[in-house]
Image (tube, rainbow, N blue to C red; front, side):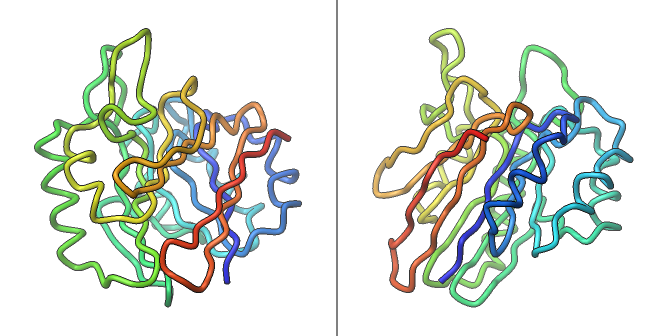
Length: 213
C-alpha cells in the first residue's frame, strides 16, 4: 500500500539524504532534530532533496523558528496538527518534555497533553493511525543512563494509535510493541540510520525494517 521512510536526529548533518532517498519511499516522515540548535535556514538543503510527500515535526534541538521554515517549505509541518492520507491518519507533535540541557524546543507535559488532545480531537481515524513525535512515550525506548526520560503525556495517549514514530534518545534505536502499539526509533540519521515502514491494506499490517546506510 505505502512505504514510508522515517528519519530523525539529523542534527544538521545531511550527507546521507541521497542514500536515504535511494530506498525509493512513497513518503518521508521526519521526527525532529533536523538542525543542531539551528540555523533553521539549513533545512532548505535537506527538504529540497526529498521528491515525495514529506511530513515533519521539530525536535527539542530545533529553534521555534523552524516552524515557519517548515510552513514555507514543500514539507507539511505537523506540529500540533493532523492529516489524513486515505488509509493513513497522522497526528504530529514536535519538541520534547523538559531536559537537563535547556534546549530550544521543550514543553511541559501539560503543554504536550493539551496539544495532543487538540490535534486528536480533529483526527479522522483510518486503517492505520500514526503518531509522529520527537520525544518517546515514557518507559518506551527512552532510557538514558538507566533513567526513563520519555513523555508521560505521550504515553497517556499512546493507545489511541497503531504506530508511534519517535526519536530523541539516540541510544534507543529499535522497534518494539507495547500494549498492542508498535513504537519505532530509527536512530540518528546523521550517521546513516533510518527505518522503512510498510503499511499494508489491513489494520495492524505494519512492517518495520531498520537500515544503516
